[in-house]
Length: 297
Image (tube, rainbow, N blue to C red; front, side, top):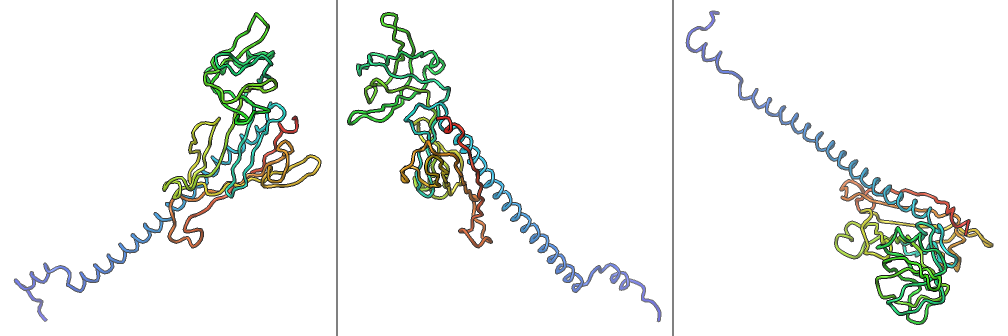
């Protein structure tokens, strides 16, 4: 048969793809695009979940490191009769840790009076307080009168030596709430209270956080999305024991040998594909700390 020539043949050659071919190509492109978007979506979700988990682990690590270092210091250079650790078995737990920052403390002498213009007198050397002028130090009332606190913070304004009677003195800025009595003492105390806040605000309810109160000041957020904090105290002494609350067990905090710490954090966002714990991924870290300073008390 003779090949067609002329205008009609030229039109056929220039016609391109048929409608069926275009439809097949469009369907294939849609399938490929959908697969690519699904792959991207899965990868993005995996990346987001991993990022959330890493952040949760970092928050738990920050909290645990802070607690470990401070618990390890508990009791350092504290005078007798002053509790190095105060425990609250509250689920999540609360702990108060105390230690003497520089080993310096003075015993109040018998010339001290409540007259607020007068300094606190002592026969002890006060020069170790010189570096802390303008900072908060702590007065311990061993036998407080009714209405007086067992201890209080005050701002140290100066130290001096009274040549007239041989007393050394430290001066305070604030009016004291209790009378400094003979046998009371003043020290450069480091006190840290740790607890979990999950109720104080909508933000706290959505994102519980580890709080720190340092030396009686306002609470500060130390780590976010911390949902649980637990302490177990391993006691020595005449009756070795393991307790969750020292005071409730009627034990002395100075009997503590080790403290087991558990910190649990969670992701900031829920994972809709995670079936437990309300969609949050949880991470738990633990540590056991030996309280070396208490063995010296």
